[in-house]
Length: 565
Image (cartoon, rainbow, N blue to C red):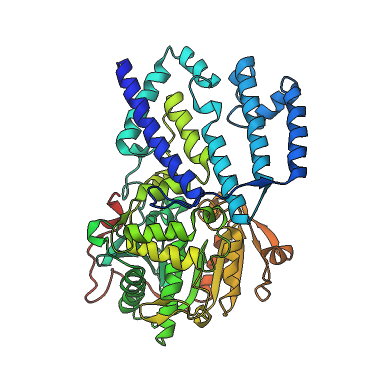
């Protein structure tokens, strides 16, 4: 049994935990960062008079209709209040309906702000965060479902919620899944293979062939270093890595080391030279191939493309065909992430960690979670703590909670040169590993994929790469978001994808999409056919891992991926 003092202490710790997370999102939305010495004040806001008048008229009309049938309909449209406990309790129903009305009105007020687009976006983001946090469903005193459950279970749900709360405080993040049900190497990241090379930044994994013959041109995957590689190898039935192996590709994957203080000085140049370029060279050495095929996912695609540009400047073109999944090269359209980036914020990060230090993985995880606060934060607060539920096991959410640190100098360079100044798409504007970057030198065939509902790499940002890469291109848009759109195996027969012209890429995505055709199911099969066309002839599959000095070090998935932030 927990005493009243235990409850008070846990509540205070939880309030501090959630307050810190929300404060980071709110402060960064306002153009600052926590602890910034000289935070830039928000500009004075003005509103469009006609929109204000219309909002006032609509608000007064809807206030009068709160007790009508419209109130019940508005509750049913929001999953937070759709349960019978809300509609069956007049006080709770009125509380929820009033909240929804105020939320709509405040969002309308945010849309009525006059000013530049960045200011308007920050106001919208701040209002969204506040309204998500202040929903009556987030508080036991107002949540009719949680109260009904507490009565039904004779307080057991509250006791279980207390246990969940103490557990999450101890681990430092809100549980999105039952993490006890997963273990890397046991039931996620299980595709058979071996570590064939390692240095202080990454391990290189080679996977056991599943076909008698393989394509002569090997295939290297570079995942994002802000996450762990096994998003591409969750379970056998949804593993892009296993799928590539099954298609006959001799497959290698970069497994990034989770940085600790020994890597706190590492830079963007280090990640390009000693990781991406080194991985390409090792794959060539092991296989004897003059050229390889390569795939980059998210930040991994940015790293891989930068590495290819460095090599092109040196007169080397080791990549025959390139795949970019939800990748930024042109950072003009970064979506909601733009609210976090300005000169003040970047300078603060440079002062804080530009010469050394670590960006904690939980900071990044919190930022990404608050991009979708109702789905990725408050939904679990209500379920875990107010209702005492254990979230069901879900491999993707387990991976999402397995955060990674970033070296400060790497992160500071990335912020300034991409999100803030967008230098990668300006020929010669930035120097990496002693070479001027010019993406127009990347004339290999490229397969570019973007997800229609991606909130991290908006579909327009993914499509923008078509305007900067001069070689033969294929652009495909998939349904859903940043992860679910990518991890969409054909056997599931879910979602759809759009394919358009391979020769005409107008500047605007909408113009390309107008001529594109929707196809049911996964984009993987289209990509597999494209990649096979660039993989060369088939040869007898190797019987062992590595070659010569590149002996198997340990079984996949290796040690690096198991290190916690």
